[in-house]
Image 1 (cartoon, rainbow, N blue to C red):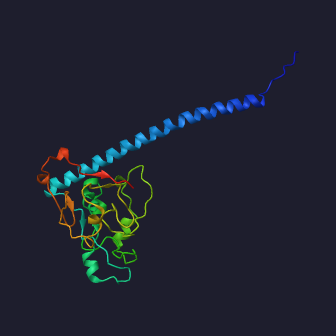
Image 2 (image 1 turned 45 degrees about the vertical axis):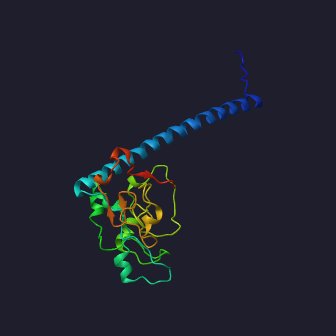
Image 3 (image 1 turned 180 degrees about the vertical axis):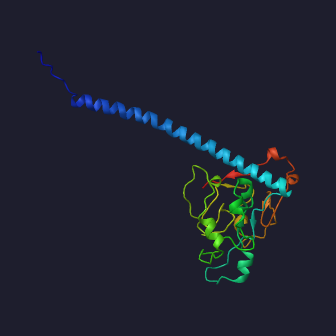
Length: 226
């Protein structure tokens, strides 16, 4: 019987095979990443659409859009004690809580006591928080987060600012384009009117009739850059 001698790979052949595999992986990875990012963009657009529909449903039910922020504000310094006035005035309730029933989140919405602050109002973020502030801090409503979003900590550390979707750390990836950061977070810094140049302001909002150039020509929501 004839013996067969099996010839193995030489070192050069093995290196060539490894190099070919590496090149193929390098060619495929960008395509995979592009496909993933395209899926994220589609999901992000869908979330913006759902939020837009929720805002319109809110308008249909109330004949007005939700306010940008209900009694937003912080104390001027971290050394000031938490006062009753601040508890009553600095409620820091954002727009996102107003439209929860339109996003199939009625159970969460029904737990909100709008007479109490949602988050902390001291600049340091160390003031006492209500039970509902803790509730919202631990609740993630996925529609407010872009799939490409990265963790972010607000430098002011103000839990209940309207810049957040679900307050005390829950930040929204989507925001109103015509309401700048200072106007949105606290009327402590600016005495802007209820609505400055947009439909959503401090303790007040606009109506569809206020959109003089037509709703199809007006941005209602945009994605935040961070």
